[in-house]
Length: 154
Image (cartoon, rainbow, N blue to C red):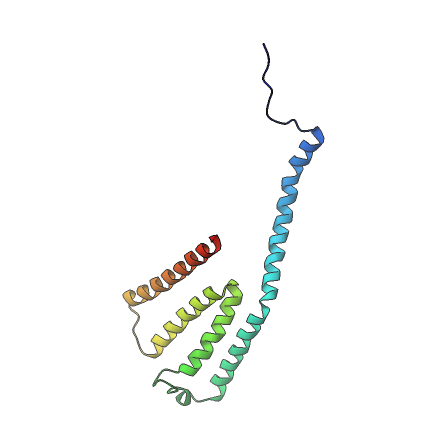
């Protein structure tokens, strides 16, 4: 009777010892690369943080040197639109730096802007209005995430 040959290749003993040690080595190196890669990304996006801080300084200057009644009726009555626009831009750059994603920075900045605008207009946030606002922002973010995933796959 003839024995069947094994299709598995026999590995030398030196190679099997190397395989047993390598996964741990690669795991630690991958962690170091991931951490250093994230740090490099934040360093590359440092100008967005600097722009955000610049706009916050402008906002601080406006709050300290101008009367709120002067800024109240610019473009739209009782809207403080100039201040809100500067605040939106500052938040956009800050959140873009924090999340390393300009779309997410835009969404969260818009959400904060809408809440502050509604508070200035004396809109009362009951549970229904606040939940509609939060759900619409989450829906918009999830649609943007799905769109980016589909764009990457193509």
